Length: 493
Ligand SMILES: *[C@@H]1O[C@H](CO)[C@@H](O)[C@H](O)[C@H]1NC(C)=O
Image 1: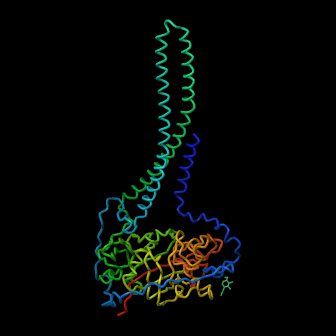
Image 2 (image 1 turned 30 degrees about the vertical axis):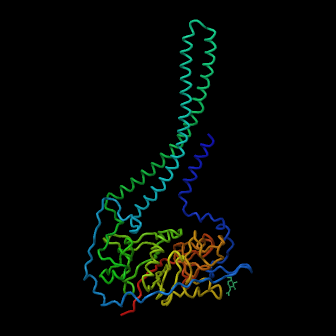
């Protein structure tokens, strides 16, 4: 009985945990730091040397040089006037449901994805409950078997008594006593053991019923959603290519979602192409604009990518990008196809905009933990990737350079802040996956703070974990929007 209750407790505990994916929040240090900090100003991107034996080794990985020349010559002709080329749209068959839910196609239907997640979670829990239920049912079956045996034996006894009753009243009374004893035993079993077993089972059943109700509700919601053709889906433009630059050259001049296939051996996937900024051809690899997507994610998620590629806000095409991370494998693969440039654009909460551009941008593969290499800065946001934070000096500034760093997430620590010490992890404190050093000058994947200015006290770990670009707004201002776009580098024609 006690074990049964324990099992039930375990079930509910597991249920509670399943919802708590953000498990790095439970870091006990979180409460400690950030309480006694009076000032909310001042640079914080680095982690200064604390004790005398604390040393900083500016470990930096130089990636191999990029092979080959540019894959593209300059744009052959000036862009034809917009509207000349017509863009056919291929509307995939929709059976009231959400297509393109396959991960490799990009995730476009948030409702469908929600349902999928819910279903998977619920399935896990229902399975556990059913497993718990099994031994109890067996128990019950055993008990009823015992009862059955006793009832049989009583019947036998009664028959025996009837046979003997006529001529042996002494024996009869003896048997009667035995029968009475057995009757008491059965009564006890039926009155106490059974009800408690049944109560436990009832509890488990109630839990399962609740879960099933939740599922039914989710399915009902989905059904309502899908009565109309799914609005979150995007028609896929017919024009496609290896990447956005090729799409541009093939006439895809609208900024919207496209299907690209950089490598013939892998299935195509969806990306957002910016075909207007700085002559277009840009593939969006990172985007923050409203805090709708959580960027505090695991290594695997950063490897595969996450978020929403684009939305159709009623114009019949997906021309509004969502918040997403393309995925380290894809970014790496794209940048290794040939010389690639990166454009980082950002906006503050008053609408002011600046940008940083690197003429060369490569991400190594997962076996080298996606080492970042940039070169050839231009722009007006500040050269943080190569020079670190301009608010800091000496080794403090060196600690904030991102060039040559490996990628880190809260569950995979590759930064330069006392490697191997689990309490010294930049990704844990600063909110997202990034090429952390010790720790950052830029933190585009940090936590999204509405309004811009935030304080140490508001931060989970007392660190500047916002969407930060120190060389523009300092540590304690979280940007409204930031994006990273890549394009094959080619000499301007
Ligand atoms: C580095 O930062 C620490 C604390 O912020 C400060 O005490 C130290 O003077 C700084 N070093 C340099 C070279 O600026």
